[in-house]
Image 1 (cartoon, rainbow, N blue to C red):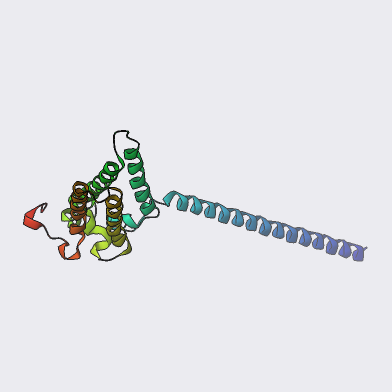
Image 2 (cartoon, rainbow, N blue to C red):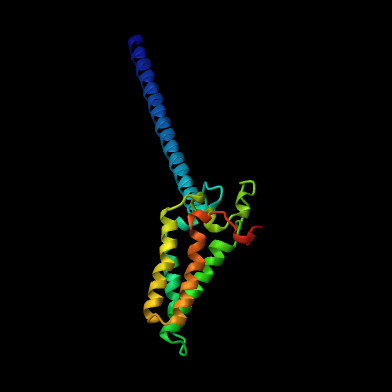
Length: 204
């Protein structure tokens, strides 16, 4: 009878041990599942934050220095010039030479105003006001000369000038207008005139 009781106690202890082991295993599995769930939630939260910051966050003190290098900006610029030309061509009383000359003059006028006349930035920058007296062209690429964006925006009006001259058949009146328009945007781009204000024009 004593041996049966001992056997019963051993069986009971083993059952308790198995139950404890199963419970520990279940707890470990549950903890692991909770940990994986937390990791997935944190990863999803990080992805959402990353997607929200795309195109918003930047590390530039003055975004004006890099805006002309932004993705798609050159294509948008070219499409804008093309659209302007199409609109002018669609006006019935404008001949082809007039449309080309107007395209060239309007393009160069806009380029002169936005790149060489307007100074400062459209937003507050922590640069102690250094950009306040600089045009957009002078701020571009932190003033470094012969960068890809500077070359692109220098060559573009020259190409447009050649096209306008060709389609106006080098008519003297159109030729003088187009040449004067080209010079107004090429001269301010010369590296030797960086920060120079001829006769104090646009100094302040």
